[in-house]
Amino acid sequence: MLATILQTALFIFCYVSGWFIVSLIKQRNDVADIAWGLGFVAIAFFLFLTKSPTVQSVMLYLLNAIWGIRLALHIGLRSKGKPEDFRYKKWREEWGKSFVLRSYLQVYLLQGFFMLIISIPIIVVSIAPAPIFNIYAYAGFFIWLIGFAFEAIGDYQLMIFVKHKKNKSDIMQTGLWKFTRHPNYFGEVILWWGIFIMVLPLQYGIWAIISPITISYLLLYVSGIPMLEAKYKHNEQFQDYKKRTSAFFPMIPKRQF
Image 1 (tube, rainbow, N blue to C red):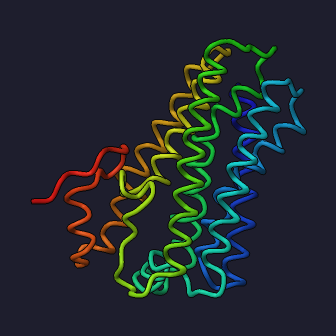
Image 2: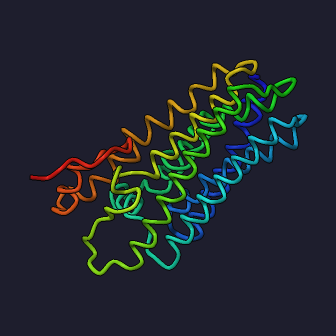
């Protein structure tokens, strides 16, 4: 397994370095968000070509491709014709003369590191000697479907809302967003837990738990919810929404008296 991890790490290094060059040409670092989803598609394709595929490995490769392509298309369409995302623009201003080096290290190489960690279940299934279809596989797939639905539907509902909202400060509070402030993040975390459950019975499967733990930590405490909600700390409508709506797990909204 270690050899496959090292091979995948080298492939990811080349992949994110290529996207870093793209960011310099386009002069916008938010292409890293598009590279994120497509990266898992590329990893799955790399493993498909370099390892003997099984029915189970191909199934997980396809699930990753579906998820990664949808996410990349959504982000690409969302950012088309718009300035660089506020997070990357802020870093561009803060980093000053060291912007290029810090972008490579703190955006692209760091993203590549997390990409490797989160793709561990895909690596595990790529070297599994034979497919194992049991209750874990079916349960994991069902959980993946729930997660994918939450992420895709949540993103679509938000896209329609942003397209038609009249005031810039308006906050999405309907559909899935009525029950959780981040249905897309909830969905992404859940689908990776589903993938982990699918590979759990395989050799080295238990080590794949690092994948959902990592994505859960990143979205809940680092680059997901905290960073996004900091943008709305002075938005009164969001603060009211925050008081009655769960941050992550879908729940019935609290009543306001």
